[in-house]
Length: 320
Image (tube, rainbow, N blue to C red; front, side, top):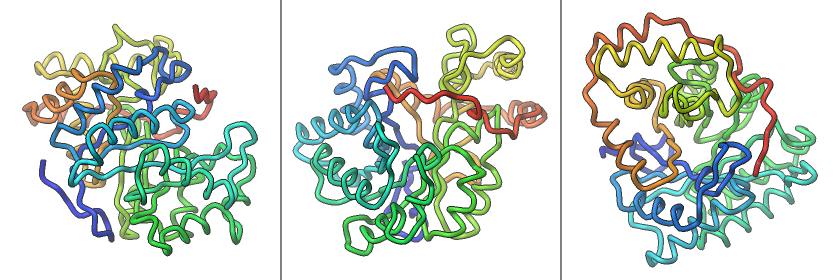
């Protein structure tokens, strides 16, 4: 895959990255488990492939995602040459605490789990779910500490990874992040993050778009999944999915290929992050990247209405 320079940093990334949240075994979020051996095989398939970005978080699977990734990195004798690990600082999941001390603790736990001595990309993750935003933004708080880690040479690129765009926008304006990462809000169904992505790009930041399948339904299809952004969806909510499915079927294009390439071809997006749960999904993703999609389908999809509201406004988070 062709690599592009990551914003203002010296890193180079492919336009496709793989996410590892489900590989940490999170049935509370995804509705299914991922056995350890399958996760290891999937991680090896990612490292063997042409993409060079792999994304994790300290608290995906309550630490299992990074632990499993770290084991595979050690088995391979270290991080494959040219690979870029993107991971995230997290709040204390019991108390919601997210101050400067928690940032240091989260960073140390990540480095130990991954078996690395520094971070290529380190995001502040989900501040909207912390107990007190002022712990994050005040002097000496989480954001100050993240930026200090970069000054100390422990972090090459800093990012803000979250969902709520109303909270994300002012944080991006007030802090010198290198990357803005948002999930589930720039898809064939939803464009809530578009203004935030535009502003981030105008400020010289790179843009990562995660979860373009809207939690999986735009990959697996409505017949296999009755959820949108990890939440049960009734027939009215599923109607836009059915319209997209119908257009893809008329053009002989896999639904997942259209959903993935929608993000890959977007001028606003530098890297699209896709979650996978088994080795065959890695190859399927690469096949969808290479799939030929006629312009007539893009024109038909562009004519469909889309939602611009927060698709997770009423979601109850289950980190397990």
